[in-house]
Every structure is written in structure tokens, then in C-alpha cells.
Length: 134
Image 1: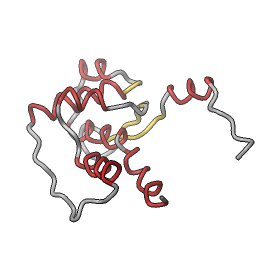
Image 2: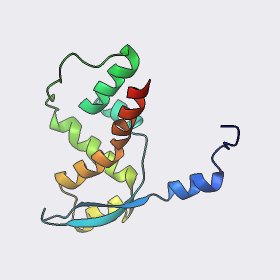
Image 3: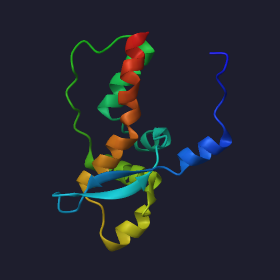
């Protein structure tokens, strides 16, 4: 471990350029490629007062040191809170094409926005093996 070095600024810049992923097409039959990057959704969910269940469970594991006794049922979220949250996440994570440009031509569907949410919150799933090793 002595040969480990901190991440370089060039590597951070490279990661900030994002990656190309596929999200559902508008017709739901295919996919379209978009460039996205991982974002911190904390300010968005705090502003909206909405926390996805996967994040609630991960937070409980971290802060209480245990998993919930039983799988918690999905909580119905108020659409008035959910939709602006999904829009804010899509706007922040979409690099190419830009969210505003897409919305002006052919607005994103709910499935497309949920795919972007899944990409952004994928970090929660990546923590599961890490948490299991402790």
C-alpha cells in the first residue's frame, strides 16, 4: 500500500467528462445514448424533502449499523415532490445532450428520468459489497 498515490487533477477532470450510457428511447422499444456524470444528489433531495428508499436503507445501515428487520415497502411519494426532483437530477447529470435542449425539442419521459436516477444512485448499490466486508 506504500505505492498508492492520491488521484491526480487530470484524472478528476477526466471523470468529470462523464460517460456514455443508454437510457430508454421515447417509444420504450429501444435505447438512446447520452453522456452523463455522477452527481451528488444531497442538495436536490434535501430541497425537495424526498429520499429514495434505497438511500433510506443504506443510511440506516450506516448510522445504526444494521439492516432493517424486513424489506420496507416502497413509500408512495407525492408527485408534486417527485417530478421536480427527477427533473433536477436529470438537469444536473445530463452532459450531452443538455437537459434544456432535449426538453425544448422532445421532453424526457418518466422512464428516461428514472433511468437517470438509477444511474446516479448506483453508488448506493456499489457500497453494499463494501459494507458487507466490514
